[in-house]
Image (cartoon, rainbow, N blue to C red; front, side, top):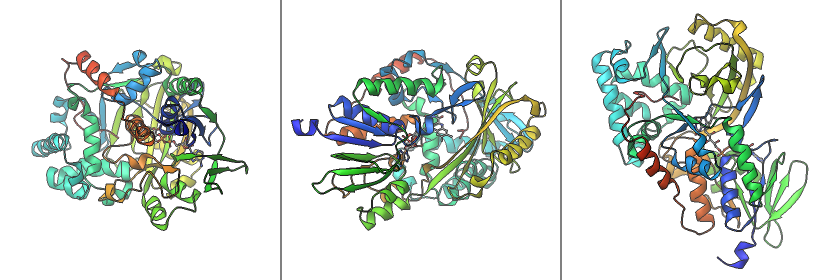
Length: 469
Ligand SMILES: Cc1cc2nc3c(=O)[nH]c(=O)nc-3n(C[C@H](O)[C@H](O)[C@H](O)COP(=O)(O)OP(=O)(O)OC[C@H]3O[C@@H](n4cnc5c(N)ncnc54)[C@H](O)[C@@H]3O)c2cc1C
């Protein structure tokens, strides 16, 4: 490492977990780092907010036992040992009925499918969990692949509603690598030598993780600037890169890393070539409208309830209080109702009141014991760019992380090529990218975590026959 590179001045734009982890690793390697975030707090998609009297994640978040990159980071933050691990149950709302699908016996009893359908569904999941060559699956449409493996009826009864739930009508453009990555995540524990998959959380949620992370960044000398929205980035005479902010302020750096969505990054830098612009804008995103409800009593005891009935205006019911101790929510139940939509969907124009009406009507129909007076608080989060659609041959169309503009790098969730969007993948991407930016070998602390976890959970059994959202 040369003295010149050590004194390099780096800017990271985007204070989500990707930008935060990158900032930490660059600062640990002796670089001067400034982190810019447009929101008033760190954390991006994982940030927390106040819902009534409760402070918890704006979007539902769980950690899996096999999330070794994230767990290694939590260990550095001194929080990993506090994690609570819970075996949760999965529900299915189908043909007007709420059914449990939490173990093999319930799966075999599941009424909407006949025995042959169940066997084919089980065989599809078993097969997908064992496929190694994901690149091959990028060439095949997910609908075609699942229809062939599971049969038409199982595809229409189970897979199609699940695909529509996450991808909307864009499921037609998605490749089989999407469902492969989803199944791989749910069965990752087995790949790492564990026989069981459990869901975990840190008491206090991401608010606590992010606060501790912010302190760590400060200790390592990272300057954190909140409420700083980057408007553009351009080369100055002399070669430095200038960042210009919404309030007109400018600051120059040797190296800039944008961790924001590709389309947003493309708009910021006019010096990128036409080909780079086209690749960045070519990544199609899926957005989300996610309602949080604080309730006086629980709806059911499923962490995830998948929905196959079309009258329901949301994608799934995520009952966080089926996982997290209700004492964390002042004794209340916390429920998320997500709806994944395209960034230009008309649903983004609905008011909170309109969303509340339509969502609560559906909840009342699904759960007969639910009363409107149970609702203590209701809030809506809207994000137009959440994750890139895994279209056919996705990895061949990816924009490069290092751009043609000297010193400018664009790294974001679009670079998670063979996985789903989750914090473990985000942290792993940050660790890999930091090593590349610093021309250093990648640290693999996560291996130690994997070995420790495998020892702790060696003799346990399995659950979760169908992956949730
Ligand atoms: C509904 C939902 C459920 C999820 N569930 C889970 C789960 O159960 N488990 C799990 O592990 N993960 C889950 N995730 C995924 C997890 O939240 C992401 O993996 C992670 O937060 C991505 O971090 P990021 O830094 O890449 O992106 P982001 O969090 O999007 O960070 C980008 C940051 O850039 C900032 N920014 C944008 N434009 C500008 C600008 N012009 N100037 C300055 N700053 C800017 C944004 O404000 C944001 O803070 C979920 C996500 C969602 C939405």
